[in-house]
Image (cartoon, rainbow, N blue to C red; front, side, top):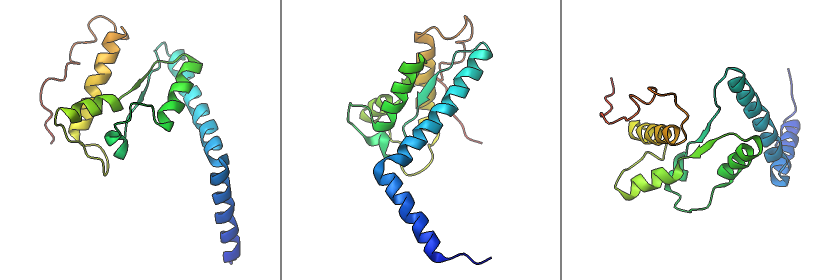
Length: 148
């Protein structure tokens, strides 16, 4: 089936205009809120407590700015509006980097990034009493991770 390349150019230009005007971002945020709302509702219906954790990726791990990033602000606003606990891990990664830890910022996390996140999430769950007594056992993550 023939399709004019001019149509492709029109679509590209249209999307660039949407992005420049903020319409693409607005639509993405609306869709994200709807997905989050369903996650929260499903979690609460099952009797659990929903918690969102913002996992920094790529160069966010290197960002020393104390202020929240645009994406972190979006999640914080969502969580405050919906009264959902949320945790942001970028500061923990920065703390670990100051202690000499190195993290992969070019692709998917390596094991040390997962361990850093897991430790902070476990602390958060314990600090906020979001675990039942006895559930905290095994959340210390003191043993080194071995990959098989």
